Image 1 (tube, helix red, strand yellow):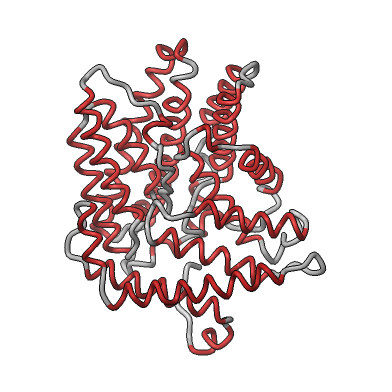
Image 2 (tube, helix red, strand yellow):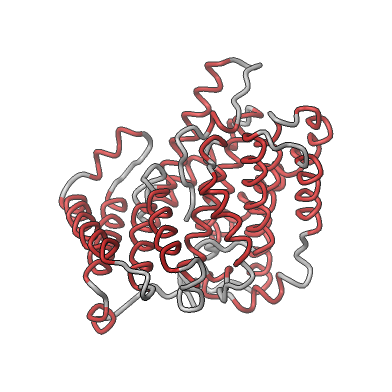
Length: 388
């Protein structure tokens, strides 16, 4: 059940870093929701004031306490609470925007796991492992290939090793993506890293294998069970949703990630495997239109109580990249408007940053002319993280 409320008894059980970080989350949420318009970079100044002063103060307090905890960590005993606090600091950073130093927090967490043993916190710490994994994998999709170093590759291989051991209901999380698609994203990231390092001997077969696994992914037998088990995602708005609509919304949510993963694979690898461009055209075209349809459907479902549109920032960015490539300004404008709306609704800035990112990408593409081409690495040169 997705219930983020807590009472005074819960508050008293929190340690000091957790209290500071909760205050950061609450006051940033208030600051964002008070901002009437967030159409461009200059609007960030609207977030200055009492709320942001409190955010920065409490974040600094939490950082100091976490630094003390990390310095005191020993190999003797894993500190689950310290790991959870690093994860929460990471979540607070993600709430503040797409360009925060999210990778440094991931590296800090993995440094502790290296100290204690990579699997030392499995079980009790499954949710933290899951959150680190999702942040790392999807953050790496929008990271230039030359920055996917040996540490990131090692972390990806570790995630693939433990993903089936995690006792976590992926679909009840804030990143509701089926394991099959999560694994595919990890494999594509590793493929990009191998291509950059020149280890390309097995790339074409591996690329075909990933495409095949995505094609084999089906909703049959999955959606009916999922819709009955995860109604909590539909109760956030407090509006009842009919069963047929609920099932369809799950299908659209998952299909948005499925089609976005297809596009990520094809677009990011097209510069390396240009000989396959013609045979990929149909897959790419089909994926884009299916993704566009799924996004439109979920935002229309919002009018009758649907909430899945809140969880698709990453697919929306991928759709926006392809819209720029195709010159589909109508869909791009729709994506930007919707991202700004979700940013206000949720009190988080990553979606606003995504809207600005897509607007800038459109302008850059138009300046370079109709025959220009921006590689995936150039598009995401600043390593943003577009995740719920």
